[in-house]
Length: 239
Image (cartoon, rainbow, N blue to C red; front, side, top):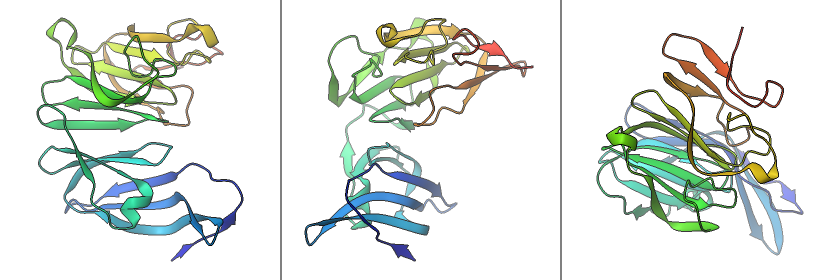
């Protein structure tokens, strides 16, 4: 049910994940590459493959790093090729119970049960929300809950990040080359290193995939906002 296609240049992973009612994690798609006899082959699965048991949430970076939250609220990490080889994921020390994880291009965002936000990985464009450093292999506290308001949701995108606070404020930071942060600015020199408010009364985010340079936000009253370089690089109501 899987094919291994010979290629000449290694490429990035592109995997879909699904978790069943009995907490089994399945995946399918392109799981990166492997070398055999000096040649590089794609690892492609066109049907769901059982990856791990006892999983309540999971996400994978475009660079092939899989992060899962087990049924006990513990964060674990394993590369996508090793999970196919039935290796065990490694425990990632995060204070308290982990309730959400989101993976971007090469960084991730994690929220614990108190609403604390942690990030790890590449920080080339400030996507970790910490003002200094190119990357971090350890998880850093981005900020303590702003004015004692916990983080409800965090999303790691393509070299940028967004977070919704429990009071509905939407914050964004990181790469802003295409105006994807929604703050009205754009360009290579417009990266934002720390979380900045761009919208209020936000209920949820859409289209914040690792490939996407733009995202949408739904407010509490049902109004949908989108941001792109065609609407002034700010969140604008959609007709």
